[in-house]
Structure formats: structure tokens, C-alpha cells
Amino acid sequence: MPEHRPAVEGADEAADTDPKAPQGSGPGAAAHRRPAPADDPATRAAAPTDRTPSRSAKPRALRRTLIALPVALGVLVAGSYTATALLDIPSPPTLVQLLATEPSQQGTLFATRTIPAPAAPAPLPVHDEPLPATVPWKGERIPTEQFLATTHTNAFLVLRDGRLTHGWYRDGVGPTTRLSSWSAAKSVVSLLAGQAIEQGRLREDDRLVDLLPRLKTGGAYDAITVRDLLDMTSGVDVPENYNEYYPLTGTARMYLTRDLPAFAQDHRGLRFPPGSQGAYRSIDTELLGQVLAKVQGRPLADLLADNIWAPMGAQDSATWNLDHDNGHEKAFCCINATARDYAKLGQLVLDNGRAQGKQIIPPAWIKRIATPAPHQVDGWGYSAQWWHPPGGNGKDYSAVGVYGQYIYVNPVNRTVVVKLSDYGDQQDEQETFDALRAITQSG
Image 1 (spheres, one colour):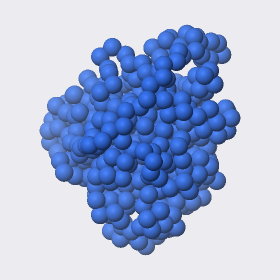
Image 2 (spheres, helix red, strand yellow; image 1 turned 135 degrees about the vertical axis):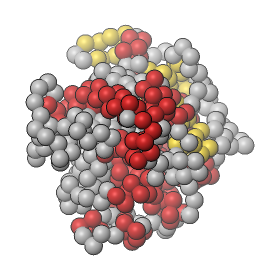
Image 3 (spheres, helix red, strand yellow; image 1 turned 60 degrees about the vertical axis):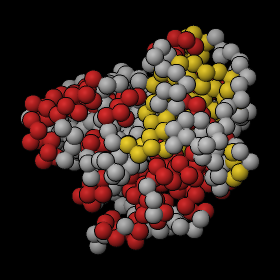
């Protein structure tokens, strides 16, 4: 998930290399061995190998990912409007704005579809409790306030048994400020998928190309199933990395493209046979989103508004970024919502899919999310677009976004933690989960 700003990501994970990348050397080159996806769109690539680094190796790759990105965007800007038009990506002024805008606010630079606040919001009940004075961090304990500052936190909320026990916002951010989900949106797409499966509109065994016939190849790609997309086992070769010799490829290009269906159709190569292993790919969620829009006959934002946002009693309106005006949602990222509504999503999952006295997400789908799939992704447990971080009680899981966005669910302690950040330098995901776990155990 992240590193240094600015960004153009698709999502969250460790670095993967482009198969065309030349041999690499120098600091960090080893971090780019194949295939460990990064939730950021861009990294320099070294020679591909067959070793997949664990998720703990991601920060090394991501550090170079985000350093390389401004250089690439600068080249594009210098290359004028012609280059951006040919690539079908935003114009140079928008690319310049991307460089100057914090990741949490980059959603304001793209077209959106609104997810309106429901007519009957359900504010979270409040029961103030202090946070622990210190949390574990890299082999020592540091003040909790230092942890929040070090990780560039914008909003930090803790819910215990459905009550808001702690809400913290940095200066300039408040309860009604929308902040980008980045790849935490993937976990929301999962909830929509669970609903579609319960309704009989979708099955995990369905083949992608039977649902989207325009993607048929007549080859191995055609074996990809909905289950493969959910568990990141499709093998589709759209790397999370950025290659300086092939600017704006992979997820970075997908993030910026103004035609997501065409992007999916143009990227049907495979890195490995579908279902044979796990590898983080934002394209998997994008394909899943396109499938959902097709089988449900409605845009993802409208599905979210009517099927989750309203029935769970969200407090605020939200938006979902599109590839162009009135276009397709970026399913792999880019919901923009308030911290308290992300917290309500976490509480919905913690409460076995129920909210406001209604069953919104099928209990069977909550069990699916809570049970790690057979193949790990980047060395971590993963299931239906939710992460299962190592350690802890083995029962917790989380949505995660590239710049330090967390919707963390701990069923044992009946706790939800939302942490929304603009974290640079390193993501420190394992260390962050260790701190979140300590906070959930302090009540």
C-alpha cells in the first residue's frame, strides 16, 4: 500500500515488474522481483524473477514507486496535450494538480457519481473513552499521538460494541470531510458482490467471459471465474508497478484512463494460469465491478447508495470516481466518504451484515470474508477483497488502501477502527496493525 506522495495508484500492494523491464541494479532493485504487486501505480522495474516477495517487502518497492511517479508525470506534462490525448488520460493541468494534491483529496480532480445521504441517517451513538497512552511501534512503545502524527493520519475513529468511543481529526479535517478510500473501496465492492450472489444474479463459479462476452480470447484467459477475481487469483497481467521505460503502464494507466472497459479489453494477457496462485491485481476488482454493473443493470454508485448506504443509515453523502463524466466507476479504488460512514461500513461487517434491524449483507458472505482463501496474496491471508494480516488473534481482518486507509474489524473485541491517512515514506502495514490491535485490546 503506500509510500511517498503524490500518487496515482490503482490500489494497494507490493511491487510487480513489467515483463519487458530491463535488468536493474542499485538501491532497492531487489524489491522489484516478480510478482509482488504494489497498491501504488508506479515503480521502477528490475529483472523479473520467479520469487514473490512477502507483503512485508512492499515498502521498499513502494518507496521507489512514488518517487518515480512525479518524474513520469513531469515528462508527460512537458510532452504537451498531444501525449495525454493519445494516451486517453487527463490533460496536463490535471496531472499537475495530481502532483500538488494530497492522496486523500485527489478524488476531487476526477469525475464522480454521487452516493446521496439517506433521508433517515442513523448517527453513531457516542460513549467517550480514552485511547491508550502508548502503542507498540517498531520494537518500542511510542505515545499514541506520535503514532497518529508519524503515520500522517487525517482521521481516526474507534467503535466498541457499535458506539463511537474515540474520534480524532487532524487540523483542517472534520466529521463531514470526505476522504478517499483508495483500495479500501475493493472491500466495499466485495459487499456488493455478496449481495448479488445472494440474489442469484451471480455465482462464484461463473466465468468472466460468459458475463462479459466482449472479453473472450479463446485462450486461458477465458477460464477466469468470479471467485478468481474475488480472491486475486486471476493471473491477469496488469502489474501494480510503474516502469520508467514504459511510463504509465499497469494500474497507473488504469487509474488515469478515461475508458475502463477498453482498458480491460486491451489487457487480457496472463502472468499465470487462473486459480493457480494469488497475486494482488487491481484489475481483478475492476473486472468484478464491471461484472456487477452488468448483472445488476445499474452503476456501482447507485447499487451502493440503495443497497448499503441507505439501509445502514449513513450520515453523509459520498462520491465514487469515474473514468469520465457519466462513465464507469473506478471499482478498484476511489470512494470518497466521511470517516464516520467508513466506520459504519466496518460496523455493518462486524454485526454479521445487519444494521438498523435489517439483514443487509448475507451472513454467509460475512463468513466468506472472515475465512482466508486457499491462496495467500503477497504473503498475507486474503479473502473476497479483505485482508487477513499476520499475527493477532487470527480472527481480525481489514479493508486497506495504499496511503494508509484502514477499516479494521476485530470480532473478538467487538471493535472497529478507521484510520485514514496520507502516509509517506513507508506504509508500515504490519506495524500499523500491531498498533491497531493494541488499541482494540485496551478497552
